[in-house]
Image 1 (cartoon, rainbow, N blue to C red):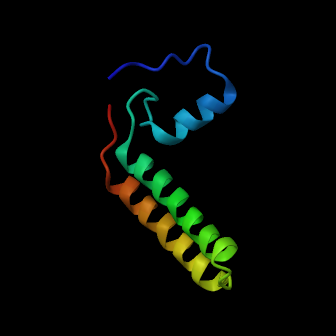
Image 2 (tube, helix red, strand yellow):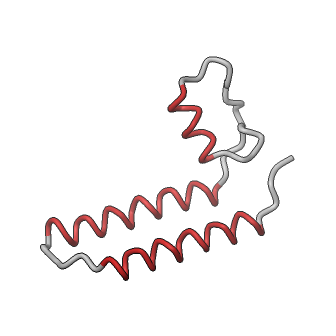
Image 3 (cartoon, rainbow, N blue to C red):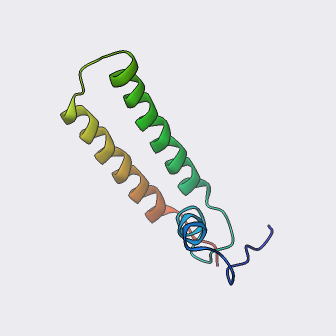
Length: 84
């Protein structure tokens, strides 16, 4: 894996890399990448449903699914063994 230079990184890139890498800051975490992509896909699907197909936004179902996703991510990261 190519190490990510962290000394001259701009704040947005550092924030993004903190989200998608292991605690050591260099190895990419597949669980975090999957959670990021799945969240983006879920938001895009809901936006498509509401804005393009003109369906009614059901807040209870939306936030229940967000809660399930966050809980699943927490469990997955809690069970995953981090890189040294």
